[in-house]
Amino acid sequence: MHPHRKELNIRKATRFAIAVNALQVVTIIAVIAYVLLSGRGSDRYVEVGVLALALLIIGWGAALDIREALNAERVAEQARMLEDAYAQLEALNGTLRKQRHDFMNHLQVIFSLMEMREYPDAAQYVESIYSDIQKTGSALKTGIPAVNALIAAKRADCAERGIQLVADIASGWRGLPVPGWEMCRVLGNLIDNARDALEGSAPDREPRIELRIDETPGAYTFCVSNNGPAIPQEHLSSLFRLGFTTKREGHGSGLSIVREILEAYGGAIEVSSDDKQTAFSGTIPRQAPAEPDEIGN
Image 1: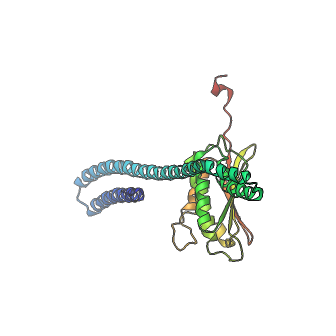
Image 2: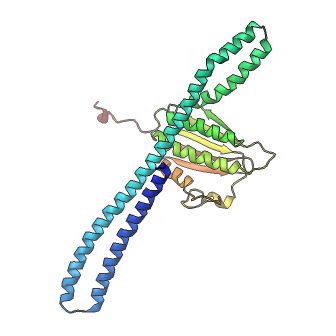
Image 3: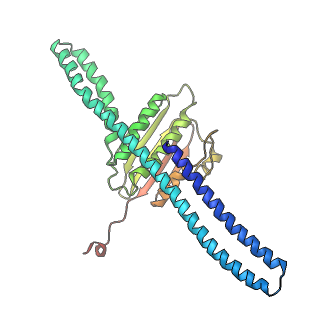
């Protein structure tokens, strides 16, 4: 079965479980209300007591079922993101294998050109293959393999759409408290949004996305910016609200997920937009060092 179809089935099952259990609770409340209002004398209190006990049992079971259904949905979402991260790693690994396979061929061509004293052609050839290798190498500067793979995959996707994705990686992000697969959700959603904003942008402007990864003494930082059209000022305050979207197709959950993940680790995200650039800037605080008592000193 297709992995996305599995995800949809789990989501439907979760919603169904919640609906059924909520219906049970509403039904038992309606029955109690009916008994109270029907007025059957002293036996009414016995019936109400029995129904109240039944309500407690059903309510307790419903709460457990709903909690487990929501947990199952979260696990399914995590599994999907892990599958995406694994696919990106495989794609990057395939690119590296191809480059290694071609390396000897490149050396042979360069050696032949040097033997024939075709130095200008040799220099041009080296320059052409260097730029290709640099694209992959520049994505390998973080200490998080999943993030490296994501950058390489998104760069290739953007290139196919005529969009330039430039990664400025000034930090290895070693010690980042956010798991790699969750950081891929953050960066992936932001890059996808930037890509979508650039599709259909002004033809006289070369579409460009910039990803900046850095850190300060107190936090890990990143910024995803694009040179597409400005976001209307009245929309800026609603961008991270669940369900808000300016796209014709979409559920408006991407930026909400970004904020949810960052806030779970004490981080935050801000957006600024004008006619020249739209930028989403995020920070994730470093984890506080352990106290002496916690490490046995």
